[in-house]
Length: 238
Image 1: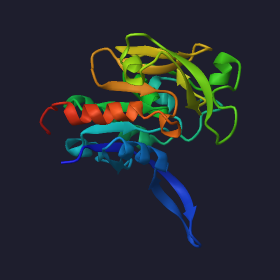
Image 2: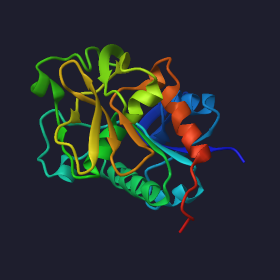
Image 3: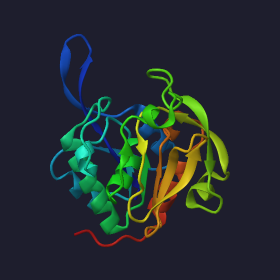
């Protein structure tokens, strides 16, 4: 049987063709393409009630990027620059993560997905990173994944997966981890100190990165997710 990786999808308004303008569930193709290139079958999981039930049939979970997570989930008021909040997506992805952890399903969080890994353990976010670091280097141009360097902690899972401790990564975000949640360990940083990767100290197969590896040319993170999803013996469904 093929290895199946679930990818959390967006719920957005979209237009296409000559006549269609409606609510859709969608995902940038690069996510699914990267998972498929790693040898797994990507399955989009929309943010609907009960979506966490899909974890019973998944071998791995990828929490994708997207709009900002509601600051109420980490006890903060909504900031001036916070945008794209969708309570139904926050709820659905939180449940997906909880179900994946309960079954021992490997999890990779990308951008927003990494932030969710932190919030789920009681961590917080900088709601507008330029206010914390004083520059726009993590999202310098609208709609463009510009690179910046990252340093990875030697000996970490992140370093083993990437095979190095210094690299340039494609980035596009305006929020970032502030206080780390319980058992959440930072394992990579931008030169300005922004947390760029996290792991769970008490879970072997949970990894999050703030950058967008699906927009780069390094398949290591996706190969890791598919490899672990193919190898890990999970708890029985239900």
